Amino acid sequence: MSTESDLIKDHAVDWLDREAVVHRKGHQNVQARRYVLTRAGEQSIEIMIIVKGTHLQLWCETGAIDRMTGASLGGEFRHGSETYQPDKNGKIQYGRHSGLKVMDKLHRGDAWRFVPKTIGELDRILDVVTGRTVT
Image (cartoon, rainbow, N blue to C red; front, side):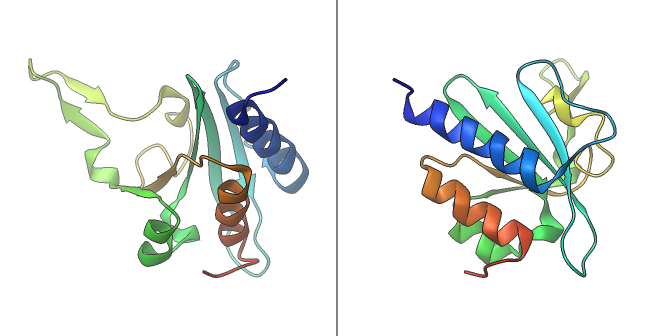
């Protein structure tokens, strides 16, 4: 039997495969899947799911969700300015998942990072990202 985290990942992949198009850079091996989501009457947004350990991370551009809504959905606002930071030795390090590096906007832009714990949470996030629902 699948664990809840497997069900969340499968649901996210099914949903994005159906509702979005694969990003021009394609998916990254088994850990990350890159997409572009077209929203009615609005600019398309980049969205990516990453499976690290047992938790799915969903990253999207901040333009998809306002700050109050993103926070209420459990999102972590990630400033683009913190993407490249010096490590303890002063060497500049990329501070996001490497799968984001080839994305046009998610590479360096402000982003939301979500770690949904249930399929219901994931659905609420995706509904808001698509503009179908406002919380």
